[in-house]
Image (tube, rainbow, N blue to C red; front, side):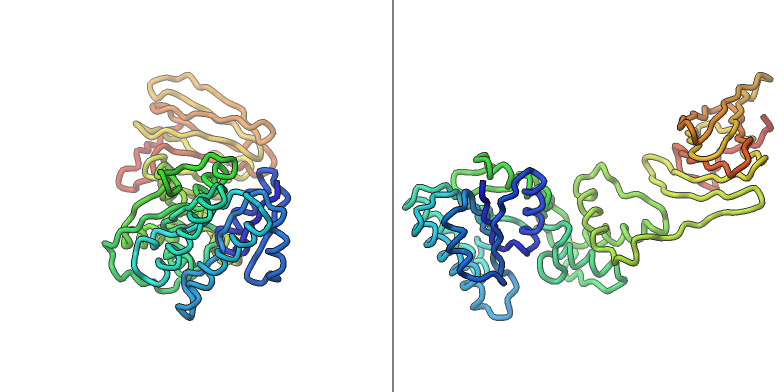
Length: 369
């Protein structure tokens, strides 16, 4: 299948092309603002499907709305008719087409043109009135407020929240791609006339700003956003794609002494916290027990011995652990426990606790194993 993609260098176009390639479609005919206009003549002779994504939404001159959102569509359809090519055409319109503004008017005109073309030619057409899209490779100050907020917050730049209570309807680029893949095989999600992406999200502008700010703060408070919330998960992925390339890494506070170090890695209110413990050879750590707090130890380097004793018993249980055989050891409540480095190199242990450490309620009682 030869697939024509107009607007191939845009936000949706870039994401679509790589997904088409991921799905095994390699004959992709790309047309951009910089392409020689004669290419469209050639492509419309041979294409089997058209993704018409080209257009503008923030031109310098309002006349560009009709030229880029309507005239190009008209030219594309004329070429398809000229070559008797009844390939299906998918066009990205906008919810703005319902509004009486220059951008919306140009989009509505393009829609009507496509519907008339379908009646005349019998070709299948898929018109998507898309809401506010967001995701990787979107442009700040152009595509979406999400891109602008992510870009600015990641760089400590100011953002504007003119109306915190303004409701946004957002759609994630991966959900758009999934729907477009369905349309490609003739199975779009649609009403009688229009097609739509079935997964969207609503959020207030002020809430969006606060949420994206919390992503930046998570590097210092070590929190992990709520990945069970679909919108939060998608927004966090988008935020990370806007990090400056020299800011991918960040330091953690290492609590060090002669025994080694203990470093908190991440924490969540719902899932507890993860820490990294480094013990020098011969060093014993622990010798305490918990009422409710429970842990999991995973030695990833070195050799260690984890020892347990129920606090009302004299019997001791021992587990040999090493980085050569990854093995999780549960730390039950009511058992005093310790871990000793019995090797010649540093013992590195990943430690998970079911609750974040609270100095006011540490639930930690020191008793020798």
